[in-house]
Length: 350
Image 1 (cartoon, helix red, strand yellow):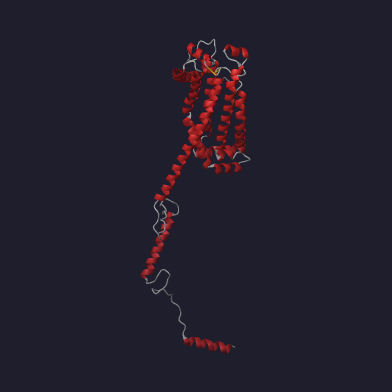
Image 2 (cartoon, rainbow, N blue to C red):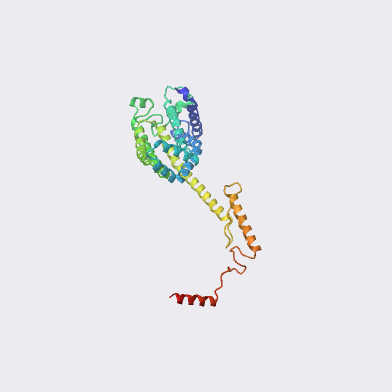
């Protein structure tokens, strides 16, 4: 089984070995705090590698927030057709350059690392001659290391005879393990709470997603307390360091993305200000119809005919309205004699 996962187990043990050499030189190779710091910096080293995917995940979430209203419309439009809704959602996400699986990448990559660390720590046994990159001296150094009497490779619920084999007891394990469990649980709660708070409107618009996020916010801390009884002290240190890193990373990356969006808005405002504006009293110039566009030629022909009519009217001494140069049309004149004759005829008829 180990041969299939050697490509993960050996790098993880190598990083742990490197940091132990660094801190063991200062604090001593068998010092428990040197090993604890080695576990912490193992986490930090791996999380630095995952920093870029985490940043891409946050940027994708911000892009999704921009078209959240469109997602809501799709849900309302295709609420009775799940398959069509999924297709339209994928199409919309691809148009905006959002990969929904990209947000899961940082979390998925941490799973094999966590399992590899757990496997490496479990192999630190008194009878082991080596442990991947660690030789016998490295194995003995880890076994002899303790923090206030608690061995790093042991756990609280381990049988008493096995604890005695490592030179510790349950009381010492509980004195160190329980505070670590509680601290890891609190750190997990705040990490999940911050994650839910930073969820995009598109994600929280789905009632199922919102309910699951809030559910995990309370279940994950409880899981840290329950599993802490069965996890080695070194794994609890890993859990604690991972949550501390996540809290700091979310705070740092959120500020970075906020600054990026502020710069983008500032550029848009500057672009609008620098755009040419029409002079006072001048109408904005409209784009003329292109010759290859439908309807362009008839419009040009109509304009030409109108110009010809204006030219003919001008040559006849008339204006386009059909009148004389004075602007008045030919109207029949009313003479006084004709008006009197018409009045007499009207009297005779009466």
